[in-house]
Amino acid sequence: MAGDGGDGGADVVLVGSGIMSATLAVVLRGLDPGLSIRLFEAGPELARESSAGWHNAGTGHAGICELSYTPSRAADGTIDVHRALVIGRRFAHSLQFWGHAVASGILPRPAAFIHAVPHVTFVTGQPDADFLRDRHAAMVGHPLFAALAFTTDPRRILALAPLVMEGRRPGPVAASWMDAGTEIDYGRLARGLLGWLGGQPGCSVETGRRVHAVTRRGAGWDLRVGRADGTVEQIGARFVFLGAGGGTLPLVQSAGLAAARGFAGFPIGGQWLVCDRADLAARHPLKVYGGTPPSAPSLGGPHLDLRRLEGRESLLFGPFASWTTRFLRDQGRLTDLPRSIRPANVGTLLRTGMRNLGLVRYLVGQGLQRMGHRLSALREFYPLARAEDWRLVEAGIRVQTLKPADRGRVTYGTEVLTAPDNTLAALLGASPGASVSVDVALQVVQRCFADRLASPAGRARMDEMIPTHATDLTEPTLARRAAPILARAAEHLGLPAPW
Ligand SMILES: Cc1cc2nc3c(=O)[nH]c(=O)nc-3n(C[C@H](O)[C@H](O)[C@H](O)COP(=O)(O)OP(=O)(O)OC[C@H]3O[C@@H](n4cnc5c(N)ncnc54)[C@H](O)[C@@H]3O)c2cc1C
Image (cartoon, rainbow, N blue to C red; front, side, top):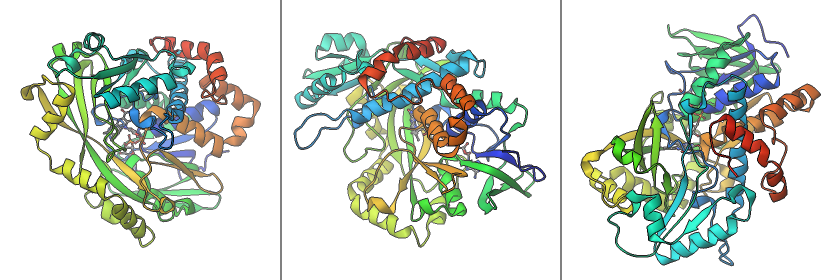
């Protein structure tokens, strides 16, 4: 595949410089070092929207601590751990690729973007403690979660998570945890990957370049790309990836993808309470997740997290939802939501609103809450928290994808859409998000670059980047066999062996 030439086109054009486009660009270049690649970012800097440090929680979601991934089966009350296993498998792909990137010099020293931070689930009350015990029993038999510990002993939990236990009224409590959790600065990781990509012959990474529309041209695509001086350039591409975060839906609409007909987007802003006291951060070297409010599954449960950003340790608590009509935090406009409404998707939006009045009420309530309400929520987690230690920070925006086929149900997850001829792929949705960016890249490769993946050279290169790309790690025997591969990746990243 040769570049389009003449119009400054390329084999591959990616829109957006967040973790998704950054990862796919480097995976594609690894798969075929002959590909010419151009990446356009609307903002003045790289990876400053949802992937930026404070705009997400930096959790390496691996299925360890998030209760929303392990629901009870309503019929018999047993716990369904399949989703946790799938997230564990997808995160294992990320660890392998990042380990490969460090070992091969693509990324700088791993401590610049990733640290080991235990992932803990903490619950109160007898029913939730019983649930956590059953969840632990259902998970610990699988190699991915063999190191998951569990206790109901308040003294052990006090030693593990003192801020969570000090000042708490007596009553049943339970915790489960694994030391091999991670804390990740996805913004730095994306910038590291793009720093390498921009230095490769035939590749470029360009800021201040907003893509206005994507339209068909012959066997490929035309992109209308703005310049800083206000002019617009027409650029051709054989393959396009729309990894523009909240900016993806309007571009998908401009491309007229049949697979996205009737799709709508609904933005949900996020906020954190942040504490900069190093002494408190030093007493909470953990990410502690609680139960998920049934009305807010996309936000997940509240969590109290250690963050290591820009060389400093802080604490983060949240998320709190906020009401917005922007699709991007900094690069978005208040008109994003109204401008995305079309005759084809207005029904999808209305049906979803009607069917999810509980979620609508929850969002309105979250939007109206004051600092006092947020501190009360924090004190349920950290009883002795003092108001003067905490400040409010605006996080990134998640644009929830609403689809006609869901008939008003809200489903959460990330979804790769492709053109029928696989010359364009787009990523919609943001959950579990950055943690599975490598698996998202793998899905795009499997669908859109299948010929290259099938070639002996391509297969060998993919085996090097993600050794278990074709292995189902949710299968216990296969997962056990892959342990040395994961241990090697962890070693490259300066992490303890994951299992
Ligand atoms: C509150 C919150 C907490 C989260 N916590 C976690 C977590 O703990 N762990 C986790 O794994 N994930 C988490 N996520 C999800 C994660 O942040 C996202 O899934 C991930 O960062 C998305 O990356 P992206 O590259 O798709 O988008 P982004 O990082 O948003 O990047 C998109 C880029 O595209 C650019 N762009 C947009 N439109 C255009 C255009 N037309 N032309 C050119 N450029 C354009 C934007 O400026 C931006 O730089 C969280 C998200 C939120 C909001």
